[in-house]
Image (cartoon, rainbow, N blue to C red; front, side, top):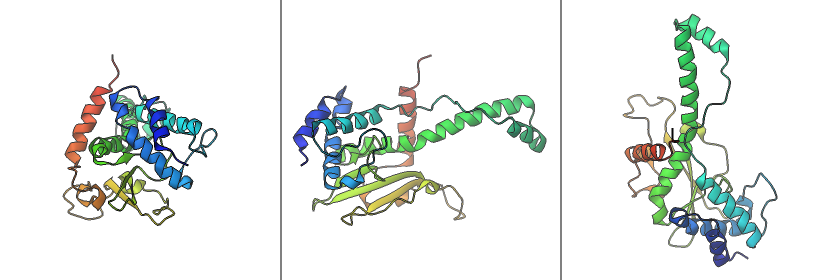
Length: 234
């Protein structure tokens, strides 16, 4: 049986500062949810926690707070560019060899930056919703759910957040008791609706996310602040 006091005590051993300490209620409620819906636990490495005893809660807490601490600053590019791409660009578009070399570097950096956007979006939403009784499922051990909360009837509310409309997966949109997972994406990948004033989707937030001043401008400000705060020292 899930013991919230034990979960809180275990989490307290993992936090390193007040910022992480503010996530303890989220960790406790996420564990409560998994206690009710154990099939929603996703665990790909090591022995899967099956009981909510101190040992299993310790595994979950480590995964949770490690996920929060993981840097979402763009990684250093590690892939080797295909030289044939430069040949095609030079012959098809008239780029010089020097321009092709710079484009290779810029493309690698652009891809690394793009890979960070989804995680930064979750961090931004957490920064706004954390004090509103929404619980961020960081650590990647809850299936298809990024945020949890409860309504006035004590029923679970679940959100799945995606950065682009073409990055949505085919995961189930319902938990076993029929609770619907509300899905939302931030941006459109194609101009399918001609004359669209912009390609973001903040005006279509699901009801669960409305009323908290979430916006593209707010997200941009958050990203700028996060990147500058986490920029490696030269």
